[in-house]
Length: 256
Ligand SMILES: [Zn+2]
Image 1: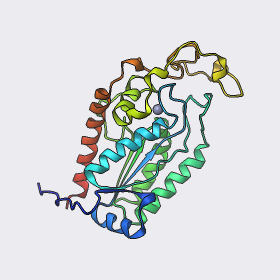
Image 2 (image 1 turned 45 degrees about the vertical axis):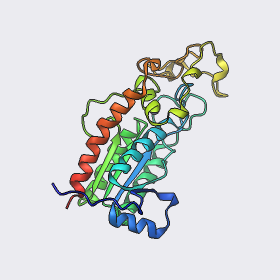
Image 3 (image 1 turned 90 degrees about the horizontal axis):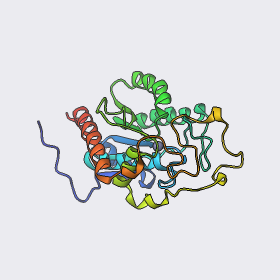
Image 4 (image 1 turned 90 degrees about the vertical axis):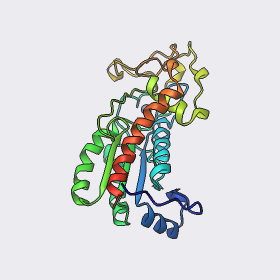
């Protein structure tokens, strides 16, 4: 195995797309032609996690991967949809045609501009259905490039990782990646019906059977094992498993 070139401390190993000038981007693409795109959603993630949890999780994982491999992180794609949380307040689901069009067009443009590998990491699991539709034709069109796409459960292949909604697994990622934005004490009980948007509580037919819909319960809006058992160590371990697998795939593809 060849040693990677020593990193020049004068040059950042990765950048944020929106903060880079055209010359910065050109230099980065010639050095580390990898783009990372976190796909998120604005959606109620329980009382203890931020509304942008899925995108923050994806961005946090992308940043840690970019620290190892280099490249450019795109601004998080906040607009998405799919899933059972559209009935919760502060949640924004868009039409699938709108967001799938944006993702498809942008991936084409990134490849046309010279990126050789793109990591499209979705923090919101229903993105998977959209990716399953739009990614195969893009892989055909750009057959000499690497397009890694999926949620943290799928993008690295079967790594035995688990997922949920704002429960044990996602809360652990939050505690590992952005502990300042997590407030475990916010999971209070005894809240009333005023938690719902103006349209009121959802009909029984609109309630996912595994999601907690009782506002009086501290784990309101969550789905999965008890979030109060979450830990940063658990999240770090899951992240490490994923990052190791993705770094390997990128290194294999980029090594001459
Ligand atoms: Zn989530």
